[in-house]
Every structure is written in C-alpha cells, then in structure tokens.
Length: 163
Image (cartoon, rainbow, N blue to C red):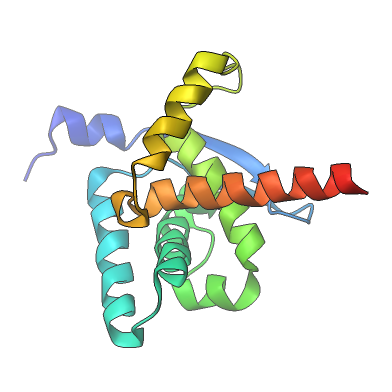
C-alpha cells in the first residue's frame, strides 16, 4: 500500500532534543511521540498496573517509564530506540532521572519554549483557587508528573533557604 503524505511527512526528523542522560555525559535524544505511540505506551502501562496493582504515585512513574522507553532514541539515528525495554530503563534509572527525562519529553511534546513569560500575581492566585477545588483524581498522569516535579522543586528551594 502506498504511504500517505502525512505518513511520509512524519517519517522526517521528529521534534526532538539531544540531552545528557541525567548525571552523566551520555547523550540521548528525546523525541515527540505520535498519538499511536502515546496510546501504545499508555496501554503498556495499564497492563503493567493491572498485573502489579500499584498505588497512584507509582502509577505515574510507570507511565513515565513507558513513555520514555519510546521517546528516548539514539542521537545518531532517531529511528533507533535508546533502550529496548521498560524493564531495562526501570532497572538502570532512578525516579529522579525518570522525572527529569519526562519533564524534557513534555517540553518537546508540548513544544514548550524556555522563554515563557513569568507568571503574574493574578495568575498565581487563580491557580491557588483552582487547586483548592480539585482532588488528586482530577489530574491525569502527565499533570501528576508536573505537580510532583513542582512539589519536589518547591521542597528543594525551601530546604535550601532553611540552611
């Protein structure tokens, strides 16, 4: 069957960034995933979660592992996976490394630029109000990752000012 124009376009160079694997000089490419790849990662994570029956916090980490297994690529060949299995990533990475790589993935996937304008006091107050009306169940895996990362960063900043 002949490939569509969209299929040929997507076979080009995907949106990506080449970064150092956290804490090392080892280069890894992190690419934006297609909808099909995201669904595949979520299906894998759901299967894992059903088999292992893990809590919500661990579920977030599991989804990140499945996303990164597909998003991490060889910097010299973006079609080649950097790792061959979630188990490999799980065995050789810490949660902090996974959250850092997933943050980079989200920036690429959402095409977030580092030159975003600073948040205003009014925006901050609106966020506080919205968060006050929400429960943890209102957040999907990616939003939980962002919240967890924010919480870790906030606690780190607080502990630095206490010292």
